Length: 148
Image 1 (cartoon, rainbow, N blue to C red):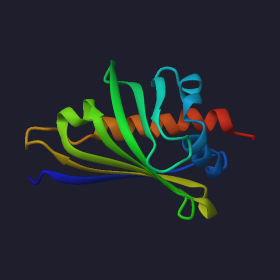
Image 2 (cartoon, helix red, strand yellow; image 1 turned 30 degrees about the vertical axis):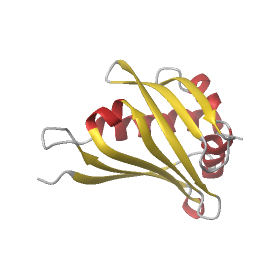
Image 3 (spheres, rainbow, N blue to C red; image 1 turned 90 degrees about the vertical axis):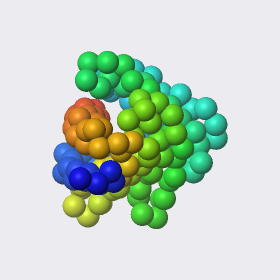
Image 4 (cartoon, rainbow, N blue to C red; image 1 turned 180 degrees about the vertical axis):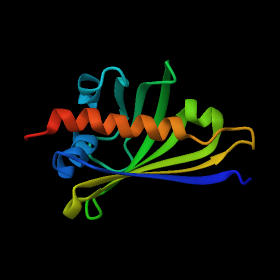
């Protein structure tokens, strides 16, 4: 079995996908209030919210343990996508590289998570727990944004 992989999850949302895209672009610091059992902290280290090449970090709960991720963002307003390039943290302990992209498909009100990764070795598991975490995170945020 190979070391490289891609996982894709597409979720129809009950709220406007634009709200979720804008949330991750401009208001990610509010995520811990909307999903406190999953996100415990967000920090902007460099740059500005909503700007490409900003450096951010998240503390999150995965597998019952608090984890950390430091990422560099790439924001594409035309494509309505945000790419999170993992630079430090828990996922970097397991994977040689990992990139997560959130894409809005506005006409269908879908959010797509695309997780591209390369495992450090063949014993490293596929990041299925992380993609599941992301699905439930969207559901938490969606609940907060319904009706807005």
